[in-house]
Image (cartoon, rainbow, N blue to C red):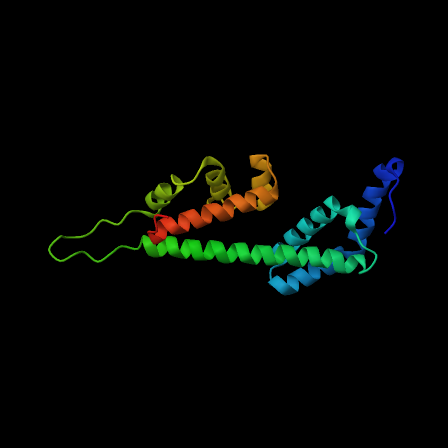
Length: 179
């Protein structure tokens, strides 16, 4: 890996990133498109991979070649995306099951079923403000980690952690577990 001299950093970093992008962007997008079947998602993940690469440009290895490094970043982002999508799907499925009405008890008439919004509002009251903000932006509003982090003025890792913890609390609320 070539060392960047501080005086040359202003020119070297953009040039190094440009070279990395020129050499590998098409292959990264193509591989992600094949893995996801979704060209738009593939482009988004590839863009995120190059943003990560830009932040970690000083880590670009010579061995293994930079291609392996950037593809690994892209694949890790895809894996994170899939994991998040599975968590959201399970949570939304649980929310729907919990709010789909219950058979009336004999002799008591119909049992009112709380709306999904009312159940969600009740679950959100169990969250502290930081977790609530992350949960609403990521899960309810469907923003990306980067978008949510930018809005909240924090890191992507912090938003991811807070969202995961909030999901656990909301899930326990809908499962009826008070812990």
